[in-house]
Length: 244
View 1 (cartoon, rainbow, N blue to C red):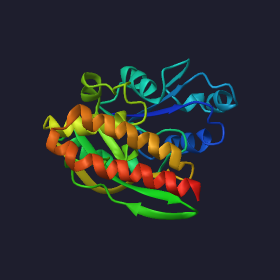
View 2 (view 1 turned 60 degrees about the horizontal axis):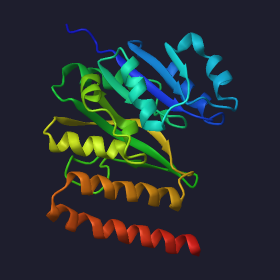
View 3 (view 1 turned 120 degrees about the vertical axis):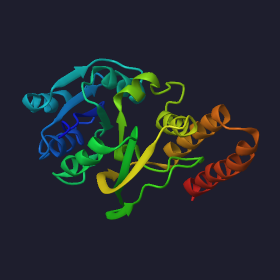
View 4 (view 1 turned 90 degrees about the vertical axis):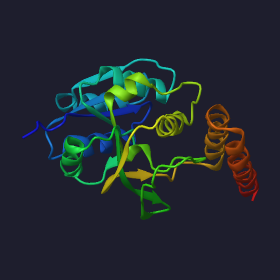
């Protein structure tokens, strides 16, 4: 029998005192025991670090220092990880159930894919709905949430998140992996609960503008003609909605 894979769960945060404890609890209560937990804190100046330290006996690596943003912290966590597979569960994100990693582990053990992803439960306006991961394709947006993605560590080391994309480096990474021909596998499992209530139209537009920069960087002229108009329309529509 093959040895079960080691999974590195990485949480990055800064000034997340209202969200971090729930995220930590959703990780350390997992029934699967062949994982490590890494928290990269961006030198929080609120109560985040004391909360983290309350659980330090359950967390293998804790780092708290200034960084260049979320993706810089994610790259730092990857460099420290010992797992074969990495999943990023950031402050405010939760595993869907206490046996999530237990259910995912057999897929990771047997697959030849480098990227394995599932579904998420999305929370918005006090409602929850299942968001299925889509089949990989060339797109103007992510076709699944990074909270549902398990990636081989070696891939993240070779292709770290591009800090030139402060809002969409995960989109840039996934799009690049698809274009380079790496193998993706979708599993019919709900991986995480993602709360999108805090995302404003202004933040959404910043993300869309960064998506545009990713497309300009990676896609052909035909693809840019296909994708860019709809993104510019979304930005304009969000601005109109914000004025109402």
